[in-house]
Structures are given as structure tokens and as C-alpha cells.
Image (cartoon, rainbow, N blue to C red; front, side, top):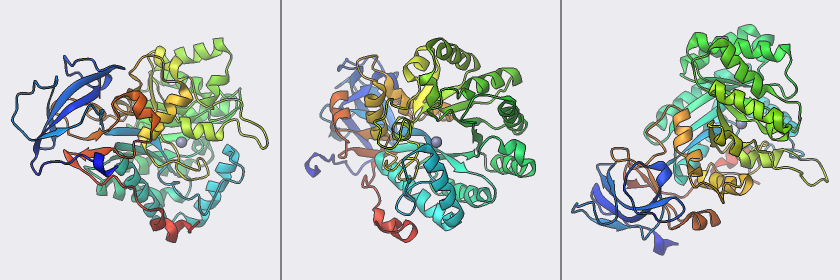
Length: 443
Ligand SMILES: [Zn+2]
């Protein structure tokens, strides 16, 4: 592995030569085609930025050369949906049976017993160091925000956002069952104020059954609160095997009936894949008309959905990503949970998420621009349009691979990747699990 490591000059000007870039992530042209939607190019890096991208040998600058040897160059990637506050508790709180219900109970117990500020901070920071080492530029995390936990976790989030500024852009979403807005109005109002104070996003987990008046009422309270405070919305939606779960359509309707002007993201949306064709098509049309953004969490949902003891899973647990994309809906894929009861594994590595998404969602044998799902699309949804793209003038925040094709890229974990942050190579070794032993216990 070491023999493949690139070595960089001690100057802040150099050329990355013989690179291949996904044409869906750049407007630089004309770049000679290099197969699979890749273009051949050289990148001129100056002062921590991409100064120019041009066809090989045409930059016309005199600067030291770092030869990528036909390797793929990507922008640092964008993770639209994570749970940093739950991360890495697996050693002390495993999921008893691998189900979504088992995960909810285990996390509730662990939160009550252990989630003080030091514990949350240590695990969140560890998770961010994983993401950073793998080449992530921005992370949105949901924060469990029921009762007294909000006052513990949101200040820790604010502290880490400050600490990580310039390395990872961090956003947070308040997570709670949406009926919190009906059952405990004073606490809900205090939470909305806290989220607004921290510049967060309002969210919530919708009901896991069919839509009733109570569900519609809870949604309308959330939309009102978001509109009154200028907040965006980001929901956990229909994460269930239950065919009747249809809150996605109710969210689309709420956008239309309230004329909500903010951004609305719907995560998971698993049960839509189980709906009859006509109902699915109709829901997707409502989602498109309402301008919702969808985020699928393929690795986590394949772990949780369709699980029953001593029975082989019958479906992959993922929403209808191809159909959303075909309908012009903004659709992303993201990490979701890491080493907690909702997902036992994971390391906030978006190249892993993308590689597994290609397998789970069959993103191969079709159009070659799916890399947007972990790059420019989630960046747009997060209001960070300069991230997840390769353009002259943008920061030289890059992942450089030995892989020359998407086939080589998706066949291996890409553990020998190089990550540049503002034009400088960073240490790509993820942190050691032993650091977390004082918090979660040694295995
Ligand atoms: Zn989630």
C-alpha cells in the first residue's frame, strides 16, 4: 500500500496530472472521455484551491507535478443523514434481535443511563474523526431531542460544530416522535426555540402506521413551528415493513396546504417500495410536486428491514431511488447509524456507502451519474452548493484514488485513498476503537 502513496511537494502550487474525474461532478470542458462517464484531466492546485481543470497536458503552468496515474479524483463527499449522538454504543448496548423495535428500546435505555455531555461529546468527536479520515466534507446529524436530552446534546453539537469548522461543516436536526408536538406542548415549544437558537433543523419521526387525523395534526404543528421560526424540516419517514405506512404522502400534502417555503427532506421512506404500483406512482408524483428531497439509507435499512428470527429477509429495505430520480426528485444516499443498535457496523465512510448502494440499489448498468447521490445532491440539500463538486475556484478538498474506473473503485474499500483538505494531504488512518473503551467498554 505504502508504495502507492502519492507524495506532495512542499509548495502550495502543484499539478495533479493524469487524473480522471466524474463528468457529472464538474462543468470543466472539454475533457476527453475516459469511459463510464469519467473525463481525463489535469488539475492545477494553488493556495488550497482548484485553480484550473483542463484536458491532460493543456494547463500551461510550470509547477511541480503529482502523477495520479489515471486514478479517479473526487470532491470530498457529503453525508446528509447520520446519528453521531448514537454512534459507537454497540459494545455497551447491542441490539437484542436486530429489529427496528429492538433498536428503539436499546437506544432509549442507553440514553437514559449514559448520555451525559462527556459521553456524547467523546463518541461524536470519534465519529467525526472517522468521517474526516475517509474524506467527508459535510455531515448532517440527527440529535435525539426528547425531554432533558435536548439540553445535554445540543450544546455539545454546537461546541463540536465550532471545533470542526473549516474541516467538516456540521448541521443538526432535532429527532423525536412527531406526536411530541401534541403530547407535551411546553417541552416542544422549548425544543423549537433551542433548535432555532443553534441554527438547527426541525425534524421528527412520523408514525409507523397508516395516516390518521392525529398524524396530520402533528405534522401541521411541525410545519407551523418551522415556518414561524424560519427552520427547514428533515423527517424520519415510513421506516417500516408495514405496507400501510404512508406518511410520505401526508408530508407532501402538508407542504402544499401550508405553502411551506423552507426545504423539506424525507429520510428512509422504506415502505413505499412495498406499495402497489399505482399508489407508489401517485405518491412519487406528490413528492415531486411538493419539491421534497429524499434520502435513502441503504446499508442501515437492509440491516433492519425484513428481519425476523430464523427467517431469510425477503426484501432489501430500501426506498424507490430509481423511480424518484426518474421523476426529477432530489435523491441522496447517506450513512445513517454506525455501531449502534440501529446498525451494528459502519464507519461514516461515504465511499463504502456508495459502493454498497451500487450493490443494494443496482445503481450499475445504467446512467453513470449516481455519484451525485453522495456529493453535489446532498450538498445542495444542505445549502452548501460549493461542496461535492470539482470546479475551478472551489477548495481543493479532494479524494484521490488508485482506482482508474468505477469497477475498480467499487470492487475494493479504497483503503489506500489520499485525502486533500485545502490542497494538503491529511492522515487517512481512522481513530482507534480503544480510545472509546472508557466510554463504551472493551469488547
Ligand atoms: Zn436515521
